Image 1: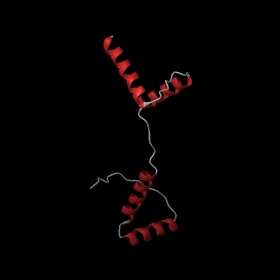
Image 2: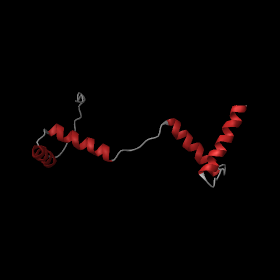
Image 3: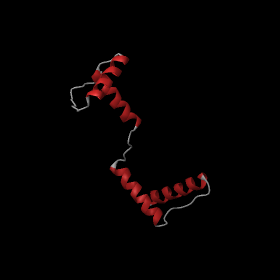
Length: 94
């Protein structure tokens, strides 16, 4: 079971508190358990994806390469793989 040692205090209206208590009671859990469930569900449903700094740099460079016309167009996956293999062979030969 998770360790819930951190505390969060939030002010709510009496109406909202009563609604939360009613729903917690209806679902058969304590008020803190119910609020925790709501918060976790909200975070999971609306997860914001973030990029690592390294990946963010790579994306920025890719955008710059695109804008500079440095991208190569391939007619097939096979053509792309052959091009990569050729580049790798050239790199290994250096």
